[in-house]
Image (cartoon, rainbow, N blue to C red; front, side, top):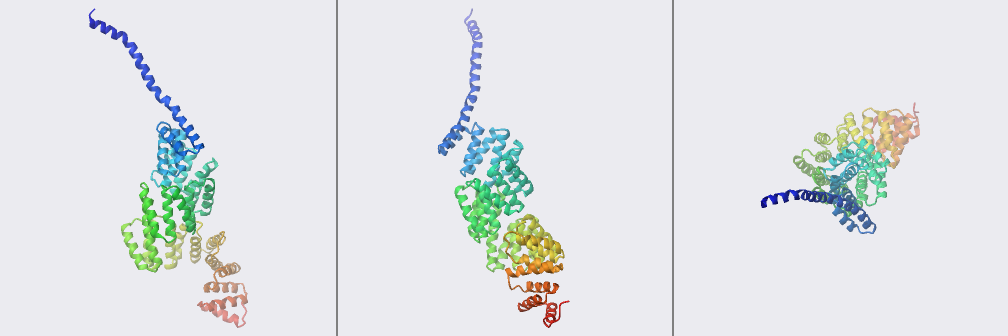
Length: 504
């Protein structure tokens, strides 16, 4: 047999053995990932041991090595990063985890990522929340994330329902914070404050409830309390864009708009496609111009804000600021144009609705036209006593006396209310309705808080006249006269009673 025949025969005989060797090699190649998987899972256990020993850096190093192949390691890393205030790194870890996991674990990774993205000012937060719900529709973290998303959309009732579901499922501080967000969006600031404080007590290191509580404090006139809390939050978590945004708003409330601009610029630079952060820079510029207004330079404020409006014609904040400056300059017609545009651009801006109602009621003397914007302002911020008092006054002047009494009674019944204005309007409304006893009681309370109100003294005198109480009628009629009140009908009656004529 020729040599090439022997070689061919040898090759044919060897072929099955070579094929067997190749199959063995392929099997070994396929077994490599299987052999690595337990090692990656062991990294989580090893990391927990390092954490228990107080070596967080070593735990992070172990988890980082495993996160490329093990979703649970990446999820644990994200939670650890988040607890240290390392928000960008936490987002990266959660993103990696979601790529390796499925079902409830994937939903948790995406839900946690959505909440951190919101705190970080990332536009992807909404999409992450939706993806979390898709992965695990009944999951705890998807529910929490969707509650945040709904509250941010202005769907407060849906947000509250989702958050309550998460709280009932044992969601802890994160679920309580989501509930507070939704309560704040609903305008129930007292409930939101209680929920934020509860979340902070349960998790003192969490950033989200701190920023939320600071927002509530600012909205309720306690910005000075909010500032140190925000500074501490920013120091512990420098990437928390929402904390910088709230710090800017807090400084605006404290009259330090120049400092606020620095925080707003930082938030805009750090955020990723966050239109709110960019708009905040414009809001700070509005606040700086309104400081000129506060210093009595209304013409300068109008000039600056007009220029800013021309640069940002679709900004509700600029339109509102210009409207306020025009109100100060007593230009009702021009103010009305700007404020109507402001509420058109942002119907949920409670301050813009209030200012629009103010112009209609006080400057244009159109009480009926003022009622709808005042109603919207109250609906957006039910706990704002100024908004509700203004609504009550407009309702009274529009002839809706019973509704006025209802709204004003809510104000005077508010815990801690110590003002005079709501008592005054309540007394005026009761007097208009012919309920003299109730009118006298309300007006007495108004004058106890703020003596020297000539109109209140006149109304009180008429209330006592209606009660046929001549002595008190004379006392308060005389006080109204001494304070410069001008009302011929009242003083004509007063002169007759002072001369001894009985009240019939």
